Length: 311
Ligand SMILES: Nc1ncnc2c1ncn2[C@@H]1O[C@H](COP(=O)(O)OP(=O)(O)OP(=O)(O)O)[C@@H](O)[C@H]1O
Image (cartoon, rainbow, N blue to C red; front, side, top):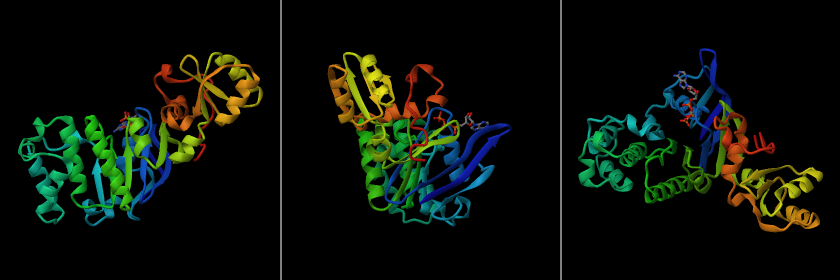
């Protein structure tokens, strides 16, 4: 379990992380989402003691990371795959971790096999690794101590599609065996597929958190119609907010049946109608973080207010 209680980190008069509280639970994959510069990495660095919190507390398995006697046995950490020692081979990197944690030497081969690094690759120096190979090595280092908690910052970065699928299975399996996974990613589809819980951060503050299923269910329905403006007005007359998605689409804050009946009453032809949960994380993400996005084009007009929906 990872528990954050009102963690704040300031740099001068800039607040990078602002009173962040959440819990990542055993048996669940918690997806940590937010736009560039939102404070994800800083929060993760605070959890593992690489950055000091200005105030608030973060614990892993009930203790501060720095107080864990053999942290690698409790928490597997992959924050920056490029930060690994470039002059060592992959095998050397793992061997050092294995010795440091007092593990049997067989763990090195097991981990190489687990992450799919061949014998030839493991003998190359890390400086000659591709980004995907570095990620695999980073995951192997995170997992070698057989920890119960994983903290991974953008682990899918650089992985090919097969690698992403493999990692998804690995994380799912880890959580299903009772492990706790905290995972940040810009790949919203990945998070949507693998995460059980979501924590969304914008400008250093949590804007939503809760079970993914609840968060997505709160997204309403996506409807494609010949006359989105007419339908948006008909929905607004019933107090239902909606926002435009694409040229002829609306994301409405009501269930699909309600939207269908409203469209029928308004005489609008419906081309497609579905609950937003199939398509929705990107839309929800953009709406929740609309005030904090740096790219105005990514904002949807009249974004409904989901903020704090599950916080
Ligand atoms: N050492 C530092 N000194 C000053 N500002 C910092 C420092 N470290 C982080 N920040 C600032 O804190 C904010 C949060 O950065 P952080 O790296 O946590 O964001 P992020 O959500 O991980 O972003 P990204 O998705 O781009 O990786 C940014 O504005 C960043 O510039």
